[in-house]
Length: 297
Figure 1 (cartoon, rainbow, N blue to C red):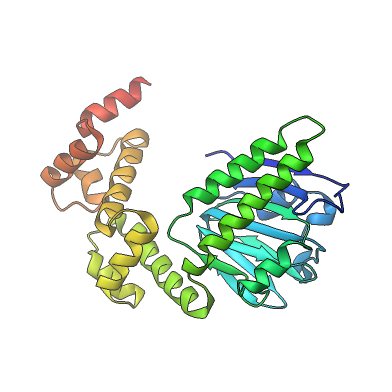
Figure 2 (cartoon, helix red, strand yellow):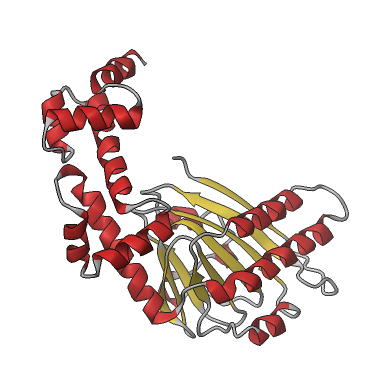
């Protein structure tokens, strides 16, 4: 995956247009892409400086679609930001964002005039003390942001009004889903357990660690973690673990000369038969045929 960025900045925000847009864009940061390099994609005035952070006079609606990170503000303290999270940055609040370089980060945002939006946020019970929530999935919000980015590419005298209308639709969608999200310290602890459970599953692709053992290592109920994991990823822990093992087997078939038995054992299979059967079921080719086809490429 390559890193990709898109942004637009408008210096002349009209005072008479509700939800007027000052900036918008998205960051697709691949795993290993340095946070400092990502910041260079933005104007100097938009970069968080060390631990001191920054203060804006506008409202920012941020949506994280992949990866994880941290949000810190003088109103909320430090919050963990997993994927499928919405974070609202209020005007006058000193804050900073930082993503997990190892996990990567896909995020999109829009910065708007705050006057018309703030009363609606406070009426909905959304405040700087609890500015972030995590959701199972946000397909409609993805579509609304896509509309916004398309509007920003319009080259006409009406483009600012079109962007403001698209930003309003993003805002309304956030208001509509907000009550159904998970927030606060309880939500962070739950998310942390799922993250730890996922880490143990990923690390177990080279061993025979069971789902139950991964749950015990994460320190939570197996039944509870299975449900939360599927809500978050869309697949069961068993399918996730098997995908990781097959992905690792494919990589080893492509890059090593190890035997099938050695690769199967290195990917957590207890026999060559079990490895061969599962590989063909998952990939549609035998492991030998996959290696030959790959070498021809």
